[in-house]
Length: 215
Image 1 (tube, one colour):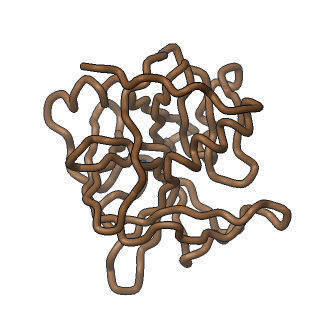
Image 2 (cartoon, one colour):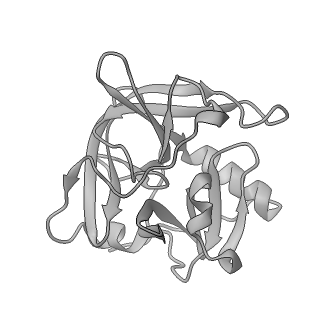
Image 3 (cartoon, helix red, strand yellow):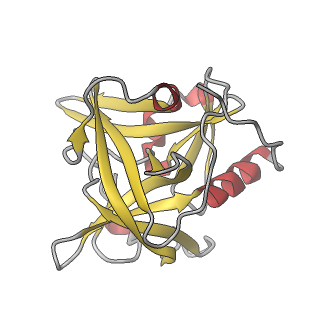
């Protein structure tokens, strides 16, 4: 996961999370069929270091992860990396659309997920900001916005899902975090409207919506 040194994206200071979902609570037993189907663990070993990230099945044989995790993907499956947002899309054999989507709301209780090896971790939080500006990735890149939640997510959660704790709707994709001066951790995520828009740009047009998969 990208760690922020300020409330804005500073490209020179981007750091990838190292080995592990070091925060949150380990999930005991099955996380549920929908999550088990829709969550794709990504990992890459480099000498003695490892990088972990998550990805989420969107349906139609397409999945999304954080753009800075694109190096963990098979190049032959890569659809593309957004030029303006920290998002990457790739092809997957999992074709069903699992989650209904929703928009993040202030005060909404959410859960997010990450993994370390074959262990799944769950972090809880509360949405504290929507339409939060993030510094563009480059001089010619479009201004970016995200939403923010406070919680116990951290390294390893990049590319993973943010779900409404009550309804189970998918409201976002995690891409970074900031440890604030008061000791709280702010986690940054893109809303699903933005995720869909960036995929449309890469695919050359909007996709027909797919029905949610029923367990």
